Structure formats: C-alpha cells, structure tokens
Image 1: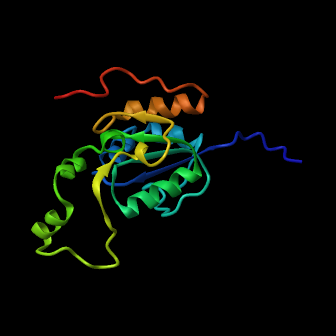
Image 2: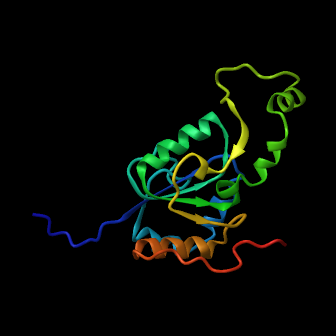
Image 3: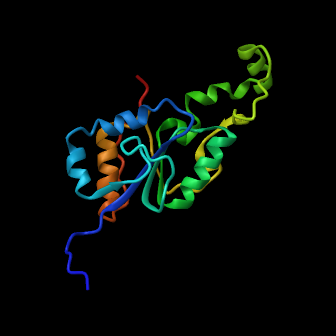
Length: 176
C-alpha cells in the first residue's frame, strides 16, 4: 500500500526542429518561476536534462518546422510519446523564417551553397519545402509568437496542469 501523499508530477518534454532555439530561450525566461514549476513537473527530453530520446509524457512542447527527413522522424516519435502536443512559435505553426527557402529549388540551393549537392549518408535528406508540424502530426494547442513570451509559456503550463483550455492573451503575434 502506497501511503505517499506526494502528488504525481507532470512529465514535460521539449524538442527543437528547424528553428533558431529562440522559443526554448524564451521558455527559460520564466526565470525563478522554474523553481516553482519543478515542484509540479519532471522534465523528460529537454535542454535542461540533455536527454536525447523521449519517453511517455503528459505535455510536449515542440519548436521549429520540418526542413529534412530527420525532423519528420523526430516529430513523429515525439508525437507518439506526448499526450498533449503544443506547437510553439512561428516556425512550428507556419514554417517561420526557415520557410523563406520554399520558393527556391533545393538542389540549386545546395549547389549554390556547397558547389555540388552533398551526397553523404550522414546528412539528413532535405524536404522540398519547409513544412509546419501540423501537416505531419496532430497538434493539440499552438502557442504563437517569434518567440512566444515567457509569460505565455507560464500561463499555458498552468492552464494545462489545471485541466483548463489554455487561454492565449492578445498581442502574442505582433509586427514590430
């Protein structure tokens, strides 16, 4: 019989695909609130743990779009392990800045950059266009911004852990 009255911690994982890692940096900007969050959350795959694979999680936060086959593989594995998946930032939601290459021919672009199309099995196969993650897997929520502010991450996690539908504040998307 388990007499431990400690509430179960939420398992949270994060991953970055084709993006700049700015969303993760913004998440870390919740600063000292991280200490309070640790009381309720156990981090799985994330830059905070340096775990490279993901196990079963309650909440998955994913930033970045899909620019190569490896991104697609990581995304699908991540989705399989996360009960709730949140697309974080412009790159995950729309393809973001990496999608600016979508009007270019990938082969011609590779030749211009490398002098030839690289043929190395260690390099992931580039996709013909950068894709947002919802084109490959189902997402449950989207947290817009480039990057979303720290307070938006905080509110999202508070709402999800309380069983509420996340309430996004106005002004997450702006053109400065």
